[in-house]
Amino acid sequence: MDWTESTIEALNEKIFALKTEVAKVIFGQEQVVHEVLIAMLSGGHVLLEGVPGLAKTKLIKAIASAVQLDFNRIQFTPDLMPSDIIGTELLQSDADGKRSFVFNKGPIFSQLLLADEINRTPPKTQAALLQAMEERSISYMGKHYPLPDPFFVLATQNPIEQSGTFQLPEAQLDRFLLKINMGYPSEDNEFKVLAQKSGFSSLLEDSSVEKVMNATDLINTRKLVQEVFIDDSLITSINKFIRSSRPSLTHVQEVKKYIDWGAGPRAGQSIVIAAKANALLNNRLSVIPEDIQRVIEPVIRHRILFNFEAESDGFSITDFIRLTFADK
Image (cartoon, rainbow, N blue to C red; front, side):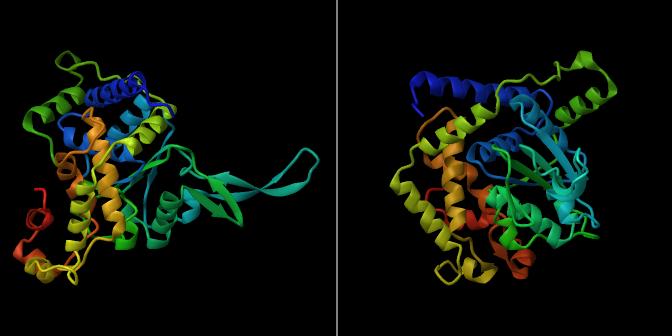
């Protein structure tokens, strides 16, 4: 694509308008919204961790509406089967009475998919979704079915409830570009939520979400993210940081003591593309160290395996970044 100054400016205006529209209905979660947009512009998926009632569904619906994308929601339960996600073949008859199997597409065939409480379903069902996330397609009975483009998954999980849940394996967690922690809103923003639910519309701005982008705009923006410049010196610092997370390759004693497994190469790739997206969201076409600092924690917090001693001593992902990232 020919990236003229006017083309880039038009896309930046649409990105700004998208953030503005989502902010109309999601109060006090600016960081979460920003990180979700980083993932979307990077072409990656999000694992969102937060207690119930924090407007996770409302967030993804608002984005789907503003970008004019198809939206589906799957409530993950212990009895959910892979066919409930990807679809199944049904025996049908045509006008001549000839019977044949026809593939009936499941809810995964959407542009934006909310996988609600993904850790409540067994591993084989989780695997069906996560394979599709990686390959952007599914195979059923020997036939190949591509998923829509763009295709974005926001999966949620509850951090406080363990009964009846199935932990996602580390290899599957790696399919998510970012893991975002969603906290409670501030007192003022929670008041706005209560006022909105109570019907006090005079206290709030118009909560309707306007359509400011479309699928083509999003695809073009993803292409522009790829073109954002990052200097080799910054790539070197990212590479050193990722390698420092591996106990067998580092001299940092805290890493050897508290980490069982470090991040893989995909983590470094994810930091690079997420930093580029963050730069574009800040109306820049070149990555600076602050872009890396902004994305580094949500990129790696689910890719490093801490041991029990780290938990008991209170050694966190923030402590690890502070010790090992050269450009802090």
